[in-house]
Image (cartoon, rainbow, N blue to C red; front, side, top):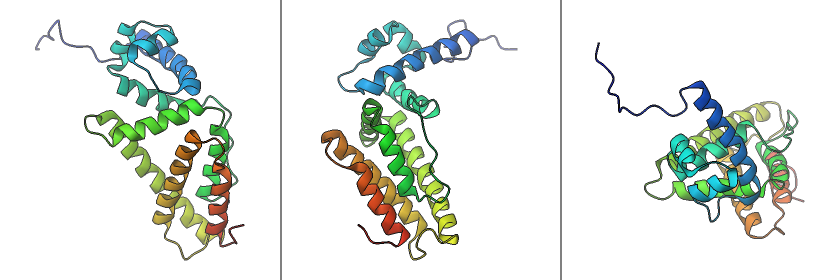
Amino acid sequence: MTAKPADAPRPRGRYPKGIARRQEILDKAIQVFAQRGSQKTSLRAIAQEVGVTHAALTHYFGSLEELLVEVYRESERKPTVEKHAPPADSSPAAAMQLAAEENRAIPGLVQLYSTLVAMALEDNHPAAQQFATDRFARLRNDMAEQVRGLQASGHVRADVDPTLVAALVIAASDGLQTQWLLDAAVDHEAALEMLDRLLRGGPPS
């Protein structure tokens, strides 16, 4: 048997204490990011606000980009605000409308998401690129399948392509979200409600 080199790096988070410590840091970071977002931050600044050392963040996450991705993923698994499931016959636009209402309570995480998508469009951000690519692909697939079911039950008009509807709803939601971050007067929810009516075949107003 070949001996493992003494100086070989240990995988982050493989040991029970390490897993618990990493989770504790993530939980604290989510609370910080929910209100302040990712603007004007560094690993050192985040460490100070979260209440851990800069070395601890570096050990468990490696880079600011990795930390931001993990904070957002964890916030989706363990939301900081109460989430409500939309009615079974809701279109993807209606589901996004409900999410937009809930997101008003956590502007920092909304801003964090927008930051990650912007990072994904730049070179040398593999973690953000993987996060955004995988998320968009998953959302498109899930929404398209939902639209097909709603078309079969007569709740969504039959003359629209489910895959294109999914891409359009994501684009509308993310674009409106960006506008809302810049101008709180933008009625994100009302615009998605109008899109929902159009998908159902009703009048826009």
